[in-house]
Length: 113
Image (cartoon, rainbow, N blue to C red; front, side, top):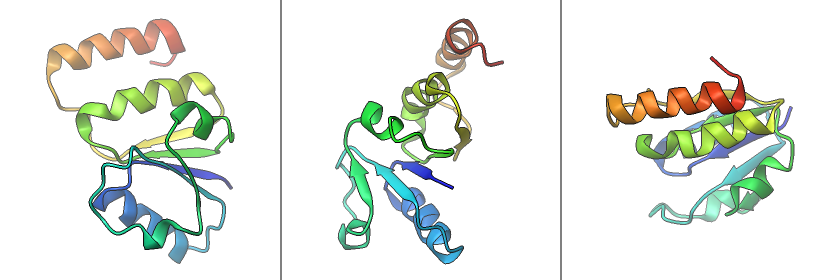
């Protein structure tokens, strides 16, 4: 199974450590590089700073662990890329207005309820 983790702050790194503990070896990372955490534990993994290139690796699952306000910036392209299950770490909670906009956009462009 190929897993993409989007966001490598403390929550994304917790998911990384959990996947490693479960024996997962095929882990891909997407990051902006803004994390202040040490990068030593990331060295063994293929890491992308371009989301389209990360999604082109055809992950089976995408763990979205970036800041809440940026969740949909990853979730929508991941849904459009098709084939991957999405785990969005935290509920989307920036504002109801923004959430409703993205929900309508999601339904109209990705055919996903």
